Structure formats: C-alpha cells, structure tokens
Length: 405
Image (cartoon, rainbow, N blue to C red; front, side, top):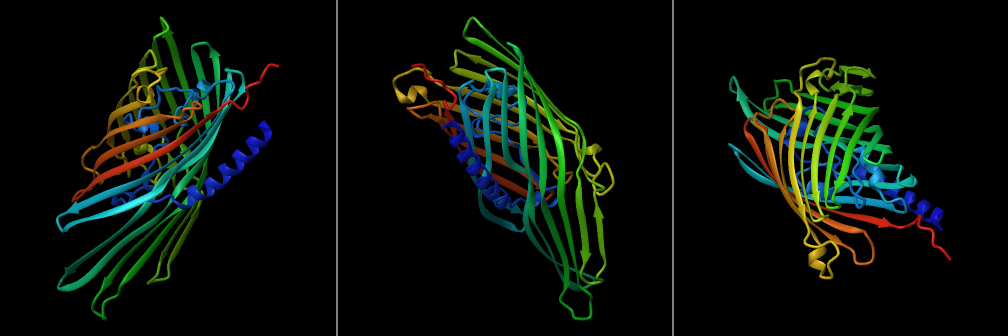
C-alpha cells in the first residue's frame, strides 16, 4: 500500500511540475532586467512571517530554502506540499496608472524519512525567476515621431532533490541539488511613423540549462521542555549558468548565437535565528545576501548588484492541544526589506505580510493562507504596489507507521 501511495504521489508531482513550468508568469517592469524577477522558494507559512526560513524547521512544512530542516519530518510521515498564488499590482508613473492581475502555481514539494529521524529526503519544483512585461513609449527626436516598445516573457524553473542528516541530537546538515531549465525572451522595437526612416526590431533569447548546489546547517536545542532555539545558515557556490544565447536583428538580419558562456549564478549565503515557546509563540529573523555584483552577465561582471534581504516574523497559537478550533489556529505576521539585484531600482523595496494556518481535524495536515503587501521602486519613474495572496495545502500522513497486532 505504501508503494502504491508513493507511485500515485510521484505521478501527481510530475503532472504539477509540467503545470508549474507553463504558469511561470509575472508582469513587473523590473523583470525586464537580468534573469527576470527572482523567486524565493519559501513555503506559504513562512512567507506570511516575512519570509524567514533559514532558522526554521517544522514537522508540518517542507522548507526547501534550508536543506538541513528536512530531518524535522516525523520518522513515520510522508509530506506533500503544493502552493499557489494570485497577485494584484497597481503601477503608477508620470503618465498615469494601471492595474494588472496574475495567478500561478508557486511550488510542489514532497519529503519523507529514509532512516528513522536521522536521514530525510525532499524533492520539488519551483520557479527560479519569472519574466513578463510590456511597455510602450511614444516620443520624438529631431521632429520625427517614433514609438518604442519593450516586451518579455518566460522564466527559469528549477527541480531540486535534497538530503538532510542529523549528525547529533542538536545538529543537522543538508544539501540540495538543483537542475535549472527554461527560457526568457526579450523583444524591443523602434518604429518611425515616417516611411523614409528605418525602423528596427531586436529579439533576444536565453535558454538555460544548468545545475547548482545549496548547503545548510542548523543547531537546535530545547530547554526545560518549553524553550526552543534554532540557529541556521546556508551557502551556495557561484556557478556557470549554462545554456544558449541568441540575438537577432530583423532589419539587418544579423544574428549572434553563443553556447555555454557569459552567464553565472551568484555565491549566496544566509543566517537565521528563531525562538519558540511551548509550541505557542515563535519569533524569527533572517538575513540573506546573493553576490550578483561578482557574476558574469553577458560576459562581464559589475552589471548587477548584490541582492540583500532582511526578514522578521512571528507566529502565535493560543493552545496547540485546545478543544476549541480557534485556539489551535496559527496566526502569523512579518516584514521584509529587499535590495534588488537590478541596478535600476533606486530604493529598497519592502514587504509586510500576515496569514493564518488552518489545521485539519483528522491529521497533522494544514491549509495555510498568506497575504503580502509589497511596495517596489522597479524603475526610476515607476512605482509598484502589489497584493499577493498565497495558499498551500501541506499534507502530512503517517504512511510509514507500522501497526502492532
């Protein structure tokens, strides 16, 4: 029976993987630059806490951003986690404003123990970056009127598999292997209204095919059966972003094709600390940095800048064992400061978030809901105000429990 359940779950996992790749969508003007708008693979429960994750571990959620956390999974449990979201964005600039609505699948993850509480495995799929924008500008130069259009679409996805080891009762190590794939395409055009002037259209396409590793460590200890402290860290090496780059100009029919050169992913690291009291109150803080200023982008470094995030979050439930359902609900809030890796963003973006967790009565499974407000300064003259609603279903079943006769 366990083998049958695992096979069905893997089939569902593969089906959702195809759907996730097809719905990798954004509408932000800032996604025009770099590899697009970067996505943090953080479960909804932690997104509602401001995006803290490095110092978090739980037997209810899969935390792919911290591979050392997988051993928090119960030795008899199988976890399946799927998240989706929808976003409403209000754009404003000197010429006016507009609203755009998007929705997409966020991630799919599975996790289960390999050897008791000592070794656990996790796998999943999520977007690494998303690109989706369309801008039009009408202007004149020397008395000649022209229209400039910029459009982009696509994204880079990632499939990961990870292992976590408890080497002591208070230390866990973990590592993720990622395979990255996908395609991003940009089109820019300059169209003159007068027939005697030449217009031009430029098409650029990058197809990614690369792999990378992430390493994690967590130290955890519980004092007096009520106070739990977790200290965590992660690290990633700088890696080549393999693939193929194609550039084509329609007017001159000139084309450039480059394979496996000129692009990289950054060295990244993070540190996080969390404190929990009696499984009722949790507070956490995270800091993460990705060194994009050192990576090769179109064969040159220094075109991007380091991405930094500082996150704060808390979670509260009145009574984990209470008979009243409202007492067992989880209430969450948090905030995050973000410095974009795109140099056109002049100011730091910030996010405030809130959410709640709805435990199912018959198991440890949960439905988590998060609401985030983010203010972005995507370009010098464009401001974005975003509302993101995310929902996930975290299924926790005792598939490996052996009944005694």
